Image 1 (spheres, rainbow, N blue to C red):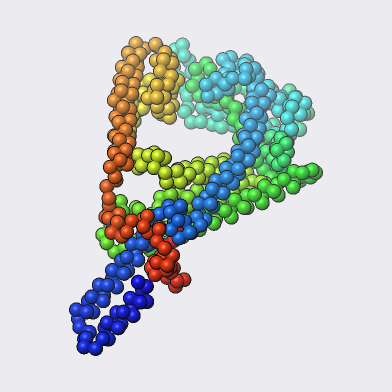
Image 2: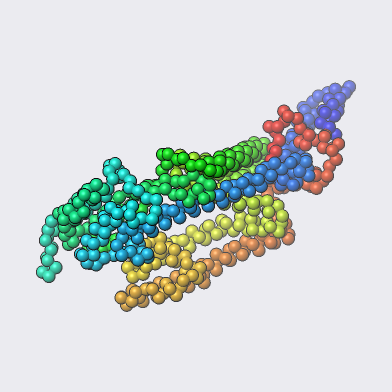
Length: 558
């Protein structure tokens, strides 16, 4: 019966002759009105928990949000692929220039670094020759370099090299007598070698007293200089070229005083805006198309962000209307985690797209931050596809298993992590001086994680140096106990937790899931199939399904 007809019958009944309006009838009217509101709320909640296909069958509501997400997946992926190709060119240009600099400025460089440094020297003659070689190569740069390189200004707006040396204050040392008299304070002396000075006097600077090194108190020698270059390969992908400033530093490290001087080469490449670009061809037009595409991606993500935010806000309003006591599980039912995931992804995509547009027009050059934002947002977008696969029961097992096992897995990892950290610190302290994989905490953690997965076991055992019998025996006990404990016990229990959750989900799918208070409240109404098959004539009599514009604040729409 329509709500208007119900109201008319109640009015006629209340004004009928011989009937008086008593407290009992007033209570009955209030109870009837409360039941109507509860029924309306129940239908709103059922419509909220429907998936897009069910909503379309129920009210013929077009799933705009679903269509928008599919379009966004395609566009964000295409944007990421194009930016990834561009970023690969940038990284390749930096790495290739660093390798070229090592061949240019390091005397006798063999092409392969020694551990974490480029190479080493063992005699005073080799040390002097390496220093003078780097300075001479800088002077002859334009005659020997194959790249588009030129000299750049340093922080003091000077073109040339800055050579600094650190050493202890003067003292005496006699190893034969086992005597040492030295001041532990460190002094730093620097000298500037301008390009013009190197051109005029090729040998005078070598005879300077600055280069008379006292190796017994020398700590390090550092040569720093700036170079400029232009990356022309970006034009092959129809992009504007980048201008680079390379801050190069060559360090001769003698802090250990072990008879071995380690030589490090560090190159920090910064992208700067080219001051005067005059490029003809289709590069400029292609850049405009890319900017237009990025702008469209921002618009799509902004629309998705608004729709998902609106859904969460309306869900919170619906939660306030549900006056019953709600447990924690039911409260999280009102906050759709997939919407939160989409909102985070949209925000990261919008910020990353803005940064990409700024990089495209050469206003900023932070490729790393942009790649992190776009890469993470694309990851979240594709993870969100699982939500739509979850509408089918056969594809929903993964999501349900992850939800059920996550709390137990996190608690288990917290306990296992304590044991893992203990092995990490122990291995670093004991095996660090004797094994390359245990020299730092991060490498120890990576090595142990590889052992848990059964990777590189024999190499880890074999590379331990047998200089100390006690340490060698300890390493065997350490590695055997770790592998046995984590692979045969902890990892097996970890898999058992997930398997137990999977078995539980399979039983629920066969026998039915346990119902919460919210689901029992929704079950009081007719079944969803009956709700979807109601005739349009009957739908027009239900306030929750045929609503006026003034009732929008009462009904949740997805």
